[in-house]
Image 1 (cartoon, rainbow, N blue to C red):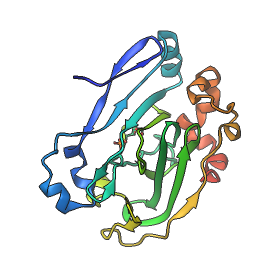
Image 2: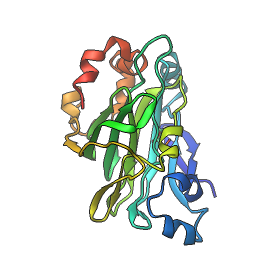
Image 3: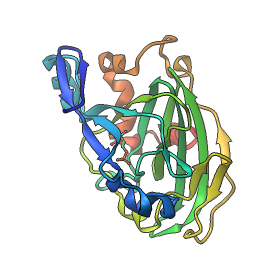
Length: 246
Ligand SMILES: O=P(O)(O)OC[C@H]1O[C@](O)(CO)[C@@H](O)[C@@H]1O
């Protein structure tokens, strides 16, 4: 039976990532080879949500997309459940990569973000981790590949605003069998396939008020002030703001 989400007056069916979709990025190979749950649902992505047709018109005219992702708790063998992970491409005609903004709606999330040497993705220049709780916001700056981990016993639900004009870039993280670090019960371990990886820099999420939202306010409401999301579609005009954000 399809997993659905009611958002505003619409019901949306999930795009589902199954365990077999994670094959390239799972740390615990021994567990993966033995499991008989290869078709098990890992996480649910409700893409391109809008509370009404008029909201969707605004979202599309601003070249934005609002998604909700639901990640139930679980383990991939010895590793906490996570997203596959990806990078974003550059804005056409510029040297700036598309950023993204997440908000935790339920549960808690661990965001792992990494900036690699362009064209040499096994050399990581910066690896940052942010633990975020309900209401917190996290901006993925231009050029950072990112993975979201649910290292908790509760379902994580998070939202993202992102530019709708591009497709995510999966190849570098798949080729390197995952991001630069894996989160196990005992903590992060380095991915040995990377040539050079710095220690993790632990940093804090943005609180809603730092982003001009009321406490407990859902960032979907920024649809009524969509100009404030322009850094997602034209990041080349916001490099000052985006450089210091992580
Ligand atoms: O594409 P991945 O790495 O599986 O991650 C899924 C997440 O990425 C998004 O596509 C946004 O970047 C969301 O829909 C979802 O949260």
